[in-house]
Every structure is written in C-alpha cells, then in structure tokens.
Amino acid sequence: MGAPVQAGASDRTEAPAPGAHSTEGAAVAPPRPGDPIPGLYCPAVPEPDAATVAEVDARIAEWVAREDVCPPQWRDGLVGFGVGRAVVLQYPDFATIDHLMAAAELLAAENVIDDCYVEDFGGSPEGLGARLVIAQSALDPAHLTSGYDLDWEKGVQADEALRSYRTAMRDFAAIATPAQADRFRHDMARLHLGYLAEATWKLDGRVPAVWEYLTMRQFNNFRPCLTITDSVAGYELPAEVYARPDVQRAVALASNATTLVNDLYSYTKELRMQHPHLNLPLVLLPETGDARSAYLRAVEVHNDVMHAFEDDASRLRGRHPQLDRFLDGLAAWVTGNHRWHQTNTDRYTLPDYWT
Image (cartoon, rainbow, N blue to C red; front, side, top):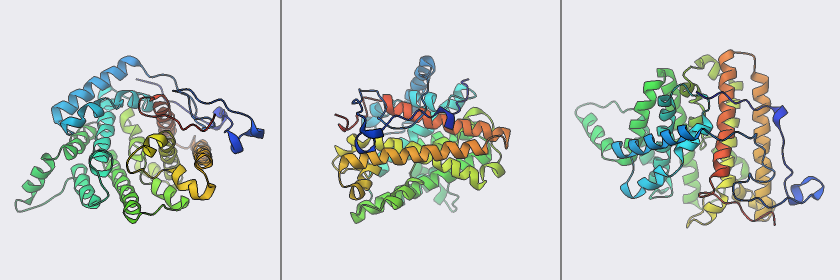
C-alpha cells in the first residue's frame, strides 16, 4: 500500500509564467517533451511503482476483453490509455490491488461513455440527454414492472458502453460501503449534467462567458474520481463530515484544478480535432485578444484554483482524523493527475508559446 501524499502552501515553488505574465519579463525556456507547463503550479510527485502499474494494466486489459465493454475497434485505444499509470499515481493510499482495480475500472468506463456517447468516437450533442439518462441507470438501476424490467436489462446488456458502467459499478460496490456507492452515483449525475451544459453550447454555436464555463466545469470535471479516495483506501469519511459546506468547497476546488490541467495539456490535441472542444484558453480568447495570452491567462486561473484548494485544505486540517486523510487523498489525486498529463507525451503536446 502506498503512503498518502500531502501538498500544502509551504510546498509552493511556482515557476514564472512567460511573456506578459512573467516576473519582470524574465525569459522562460521552451518546455521539452515531458516537462510541466511553464508557470503551472502543482507539487511534484515521484514515479509510480512499475510493477503495480503493469499489474493494473494487465488486469484492465483482461476486464475489457472479458466484459466486452467497448467496441472492438476501440479496444486497443482504451487498453493503451494508461489507466494503470494513472490510478497508481492518483491513489497512492490504496488498501489492496482489488481496491485500486475498482478505481481503474471506473476510470476506464467513464472514458468509454465519454468517447461513445459524448464526443470523440461516435458521440454527439444531439440526443445526448436521453443517452445519459440510460447510462445513469447502469449505475443507479431502474426499478420497473410488468416485464419492462426485462426490457431494461436487455437494453443495458446490449450496449458495450452501458456494460462498462454496469460492471465497473458492480466491482466498486463490492469494495465500498452503500453510502460511498450512493455518493459516487450522485457525483456521476453531476458529471452528466455538466456534459449536457457543454452539449447545449455546441448545439447553439455559442462560446460561454468565462464565469459560465468555469461553473460548468464544476460539474463536468474529475470529481467522481476524487471523491472515491476513501473507498480505494479502505475507510469511509462520515457523511456528516463530507457534506459540510467547507469540505464540499475543498472537493470542488480540487476537482476543478484537475480538469483545468486537462484543458491546458489537451489544448493542442483538441485544436487539431474536426470539431474543437471548449476549453478554458478558448473561452478566454475574447477577453485576452490572442491565443497565447489566453493560454497563459488560463495557467494563472488554474494556479488561483490550486492555491485556493491548498489554503482551504490547510484550514480544515486537525478537525477530524479521517478528514485529514481524505484531504491527503484529494491532494494526491490532484498531483498524480498532473504528473500523468505532463508525462503522457504520446497523447499530449504543448503549444509553441515559449520560443
């Protein structure tokens, strides 16, 4: 089992951002492949254990084949996504390999639904709401009567993406408490709501205001992955502690920071797509006037969110022993997620804004 990671305000070693956002105009060397984004604040983490990564990857490949959870032509892409490296970085405090596998399956399943229903590989904003309601039922089963329950069962079993949700949820429920499983279902409903907001802007052809986009990102983010850290570690943060507004704010800030990291590292990949995604630099473009300034401003916004999370987490410490461990888990997921994006050079490249 790995040890919890704690990131606090004293760990801040923020590099100066380039250009107009640098310290006294200091030049910044262009990043090499695998380097972090210049000026992006996030505490460093060590490399994950290679043997554990390999075991998770092997077991994920077996799960994908056994449960037939994605179309065959996309199977290699899902297996090669780097799920093992991601979860070993993101959940250093895990109880057993089965607990870690539950998180890995959920992460893989969320990517299957995202690709098949929402965007890259056949997804579309048209009809998304109806698809996501059925997808939610694969996590939170429908309770029907008069034989319609059999129709629902056949419908879920007939769709690879729905099977991915259903089997991952089954395995997560085996290592989680009923309250933790219900917490996860609610956080997935939040995620689906965020998907729908972004889909509406696509259908309307409208770029939202920055505040609207950031609000959407509080729902369409990695929150469901962060809030299962206690389940993966084999303990339960009491519901009355988790529900506190100050704890919920810390959860939201950590979740937002992880997704803004994704916006920044996937920026050039998304620009190359036939239908570019919304991301924070794109939304900031009307405010800043050019793409480079928008990207550098997005780095600053991410840093503000990260500092707010660390400051809030620091104020919450010492109030409940399991809350301290939960905050450690949030911080570990944030930093592990950044490390995964930073070093995933096959998937992500940075824009040429530092030459």
